[in-house]
Length: 240
Image 1: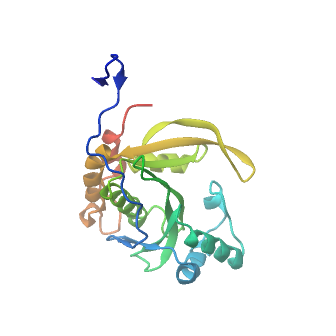
Image 2: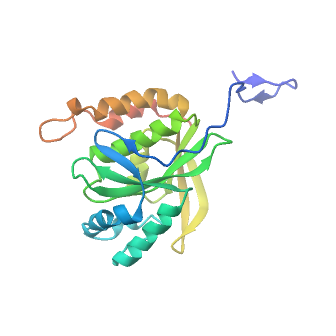
Image 3: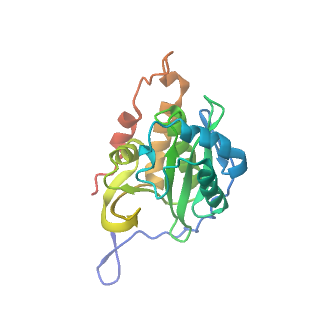
């Protein structure tokens, strides 16, 4: 039962020990499969452009506010903008399998007063997509977010972006609803699907990620023995 105030109205839980967390530091996050490095256009640009050139088409950029890129100069100029930003706070994703930066991601809508932070502007190049490094990227970010004391970690995407919506659930973000006509992207309306995990959710999700990322969960050919979605699905909130 929720708490009630002096008028008998239901109110949220008291948070007597709540202190707004600090903004996330822009520093390297190291895992077994992936390393997240503060984005540096000069350092990471050549490798990220190589990853972009490995794409067979521009479909990975459809739901991002920028791209696709056919020109390295324009691509590097965009990386310069991202590298200078502090909200969003961008990271290059270095894959242990290739030793190269194969994508980027960011933390954004950083709101310490509410204890809320979003992961977004995610671009996985073709050598990174659907790899353990891609999944570990989300683990490293969530671990940092909740380790700093944030209460809520959000994922938002275009309602038509079926792969992103499926990824959100696989990663343990619970669906919270649809915001109609939320933004305009590349001259088109975007209805935004909202997902989130809380610090309470993370208590169960962290061991699920760690079990999936364990090398023992992969066979000699690199195939997974147990799906991450099988571990996270029971932990999703039923609300919404």
